[in-house]
Image (cartoon, rainbow over all chains, first blue to last red; front, side):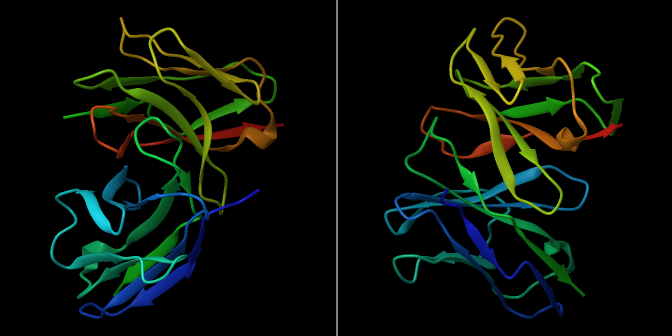
Length: 114
Length: 113
């Protein structure tokens, strides 16, 4: 069964450093998402991406964040200058279309900012 | 805005016990409702969904009914197994043009033999 994959599974970085989280969505999916979950808190929406552009973003997704689909398979989330409060589990998801269609999630990348 | 309120955890049950995890929502339109499950070390997996009022989603012995009058989508299972131990997330998707999922806090379920 096709699945969403994410790398790395864990990342430790120093405050102020740039990190890139990588995702490979399911191959025939057209909509891509990033969510995050700070330890002990809700899973929060960050951004959705369709047709090579951001279709919606939350207030969390400020200028420090960017997303990119650099080729036909990868979908990346970049945090330009990490802060302590960026420490969280980051989930990538993809779906065939938007709305009621199921979003399929990857296993997550646990980011720790020191 | 949209929100999901989920039963606080953790929940610990004995094997073969009856399970209910409560979920209520607030939304401006008529959302689709989902239950996702996260097994240890894995990502979120869709467990079941319902897209309109009175729909019942079911999978792996779990059920949830979309109740518009009480804005609820409670998860139930008649007889839980040790393998059901996981974190369960209730979520909604507003079909009014937004694509994002809004999640509840998650409920950690532990089943003891």
